[in-house]
Amino acid sequence: MQADSSDHRLSGPRKRRLIELDRNHVWHPFTQHALWNRVDPLIIVAAEGVHLIDADGRRYIDGVSSLWCNIHGHRRPEIDEAVRRQLGRVAHTTQLGLVSPPAVELAARLVSLAPPGLTRVFFSDDGSTSVEVACKMAFGYWRHRRKTRRRFIALGQAYHGDTIGALSLGGIELFHRPWRPLLFKTDFAPPPYCYRCPLGKSADTCGMACVGELERLLQSRRGQVAGVVIEPMIQCAGGMITAPAGYLRRVRELCDQYDTLLIADEVATGFGRTGRMFACEHEHVAPDLMCLSKGLTGGYLPLAATLATDAIYEAFLGPIASGRTFYHGHTFTGNPLGCAAALASLDLFDAGNVLDRLQMRISLMAEHLRRISCGAHVGSVRQCGLMAGIEIVRNRATREAFPYAWQVGARVCARARDHGVILRPLADVIVVMPPLAITADELDDLMVAVERAIEEITPTAASGEVDGLE
Ligand SMILES: *Cc1c(COP(=O)(O)O)cnc(C)c1O
Image (tube, rainbow, N blue to C red; front, side):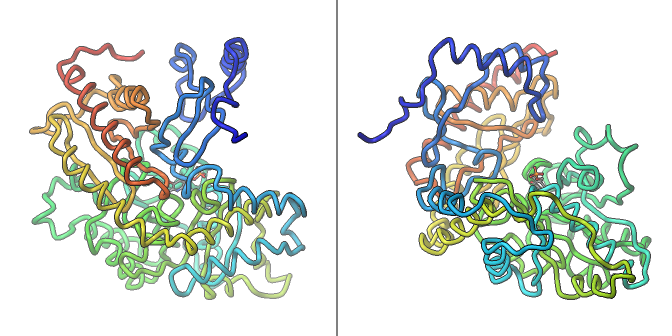
C-alpha cells in the first residue's frame, strides 16, 4: 500500500509530550520564548513535494521553502536516493588531508556553473561560515600581497549570517545593533531601498545616488578596503529589497576602479531563486568571491561553499614558513552526504529544465503580485525571480508603518496558516519564496492565501484594534 500522510500522525498524548519537552528544553532561533511558550506550536512530522504535513495530517504549502533553502520540493526521490547511496558508502570523512569523491565532483560542477573566473571551492557548513571564509580570504589575500586592508564595506539592511564575522557585516538595526561592541568595524553604504530611500530621494530622479555614496566611501577609505560585500540583486533578510537595474554592475565597476574585491553573498539568491542559476548573472557580473549555501543541497542538508578566483587562491601559496596556509576548516567541511545531495540537486536542474520552466512561474507570481499590490494596506511589492516581499503599511498614502509591537506581519502569517500556507515574515514584509518545483495550481493557492490573509488582518490592525504583544 502507498504510504500516505496519515501514517505520520501523532497521538494526542504524544503531541502534548513533545510540546512540553519543546517548552522545557528547546531554544528556537529568532524567537521570543515569552510568547512562544503561550501558544501551541505547529509540529511538522513529514513533507511531500511543496507540502509540509503536521502532526494531525494537515497539509500546508511550504511558502518560504523551509527558510529559503528547499528547491525541488521535499522527498524528491532522486535526492533521497543519492543520499541513501552515499550512506551505503560512508556518511562522513574529513577533508583535512583526504579526498572525498562527492566533494571533488561537486567542486568541479560548481566551477562550471559559476560566473567566469571562480575556479576554487572551499567547503563549509552554512551560510554564515561561507561568509566568514570569504572575509578571511579577502583579508589574507591583501595581507599576502603585503597590503594591510582590514575594512569591509557592506550595505545598510544587509544580512550575511549570525556568526561574529558575518554579523559584523550586518546592517539590520534590530538584529545587529545589540552586538556592535563584539564586532569588527564595517562601513555601511546606503541600501538601494527605493520605497524608503535612506537618502530621501525618488527612484525616477535620483540617478542611483546610493551608488554615489558607496563611491564616496571607497574614495575616503582608498587603500584600506579588503572587499565590498553584497547580496546581489536582492537583499533578502533586510526586507526583500530589490536593487534597481544596473546597480550590481556599478558596484562591480567601482570595486575594479578602487582596486578592491567584490564578495557576492549568494546564500539566498543562488540556485535558481532569482530565475537564473546565480543572481550575478542578471548583470553579467563575476565577483571575486562568492558564498553559497541554502539551496546548494536542494535544501536537504547543511553545506556551504565559498568560491574564489585563481588570483586569491594563489596569494595563499608559498613555503610552509611563509605562513600563507589558509588555516581554517570545520569538522564537517565538505560532508559527503551533503555533497551527494547537492550533486543530485544539480542533476535535477539539468534533467528537469528547471530554469526554463521556472520563467512561467515567475510571470504567474508577478500577475498575482500586481493584484495584491492594489490592496488598501499594501505599500510596496518587490519581486526577484520566484522570491517576493509584500510590505504592508498602516497608511498607504503616507507609507506609515505599523508599530513594530503590533506584529502585524506575524499576524498575517498566522492567518495564512489557517488558509493552508506556512510563511515567515520579516517584520511587516510578507516573504513569499516557494520551492522552484511549485506547480501553477499550487502557486495560485499560495498567492490567494497570502492575499486573503493580508485582507483579513490589515484593516483591523490599521484601525488600531490590536493589543501590543508584550
Ligand atoms: C541565510 C543567509 C545567510 C546565513 O546563512 P546560515 O545558513 O543561516 O548561516 C547569509 N547570507 C544570506 C544572504 C542569507 O540569506
